[in-house]
Image 1 (cartoon, rainbow, N blue to C red):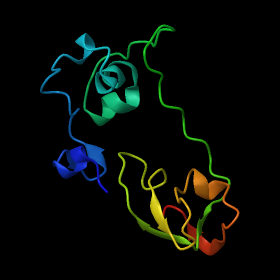
Image 2 (cartoon, one colour):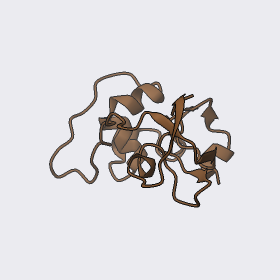
Image 3 (cartoon, rainbow, N blue to C red):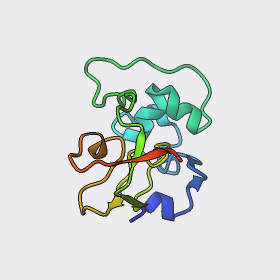
Length: 130
């Protein structure tokens, strides 16, 4: 199931056109309790995604939110033969952090569950991102 902001046309390819809160929070720095405004203030990746220029403000210890963790390298590089069709779409994950169907009827998120799944069976020569 696609989330509301994807269905409402706020996507361009795998990129978000704008913050979905931009109508109600045009000055993102004035809304520290809105997660999207907070990301627009403190995370360069989101500033780039949304076309915001200028300096990123540092995160303070008393901040309501934390920055998303950096991606870890995958241990299992081959796509699992049980991995089915992608059933969720998140911004910027290229499918690696989205739910997929699984022929074993297990939760299937390539960069999460599939990395430690006991039923994992590599499809020889097929990379996850293909």
